[in-house]
Amino acid sequence: MATLTYLTTTHFDFGAIQKLPAELGRAGISKPLIATDKGVRSAGLVEAVTGALGGDMAISIFDETPGNPTEAAVLKAFDQYASDGCDGVVAIGGGSSMDLGKAVALLAGSGGPLDQYDPLAGGAKRVQSVAPLIAVPTTSGTGSEVSVGFVIIMEDGRKLTFASPHFVPKAAICDPELTLGLPAMMTAATGMDAITHCIEAFLTPTINPPADGVALDGLWRGWRHLPSAVKDGGDRDARCQMMMCSTEGAMSFIKGLGAVHAMSHAAGRIARLNLHHGTLNAVFLPAVLRFNAPNCEEKYERIRQAIGLTPGADIAAAITAMNADIGLPSGLQEMGVEEDDIPEMIAYAMKDLSALTNPRTASENDFEAMIRESF
Image 1 (cartoon, one colour):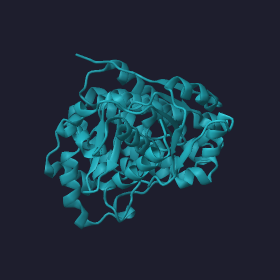
Image 2 (cartoon, helix red, strand yellow):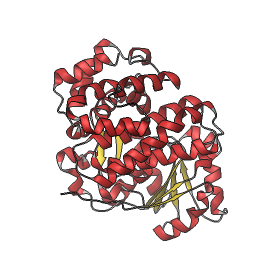
Image 3 (spheres, one colour):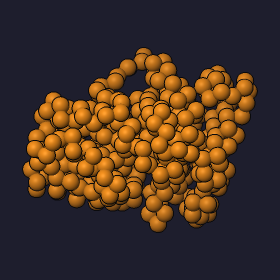
Image 4 (cartoon, rainbow, N blue to C red):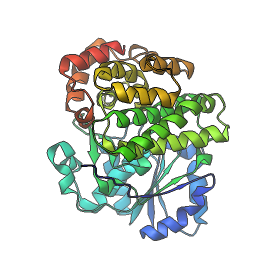
């Protein structure tokens, strides 16, 4: 049985940020916490967004979101939310800011501690309510603005994926104008994040043909336009297409994800490195595609069609070539991952929520082989 759910309203176009006041009113938010990071704020994007409010609304700005959001940062932001009397969240930024905003909204609506909502421990059933949240992405990667999940590094070192329909923002405002200044390397990394979402979601065994169609459309857009977006950050069409790829990737991973994300989450928790999630996805994707190949013959042909490869062509090799073309690292070693990191990466990948929907079950030995292949 397929359960088809797309619960939020998405405003998508250049200038879409002008929809923010109406969406705040519809959500009943009179004093939002702005969840963002210092980079987004210093780039002037917070002011570009809040400028749409006309200066009449009281706001509280939390700009200390780390590159990989932590439980400590969530608690600090929630304290500010409570002390400033906020009644909703506006998340402005990439996936980190949106994930932190979702976690704050969860604590505001259902209370702490945060780890009680771990879905692998039945935590999704404990979610009672979530404070209203509106998401405004400034990158084209995670698609968290329309997704049911968020990821937080907990105090004990676990990198947990939380998932519930309650976590879908009340509205997503996708304005490609906000991505025009994104640096080339961040464009590349977030773009491969979006492309990986489309591919992994499509390959899961979950039955959801409409989501499959959304994933393939997102992949078609992303594959054709990512090199242009990286080469020329002012290419408005490429920026628009990449933002749609990102949004569609997250719409499609209502089906789940796979081993790429399981390993990326495991590597992303290495505190000394603070590795970018999208870059990790790009590096792990070729090895996972090779591992999954025996179970995905028909679906691989559809992926080849979407990205313009000939029948039977090596998709993993095409991904590797794309990574090189847009300037991403060639492997984990280049990113600072060491041999001693492998055992913990395997252990955490095995326990990650995304591993459950990989099209081919991966053992400890399989994860080790894929990690080593990605070095």
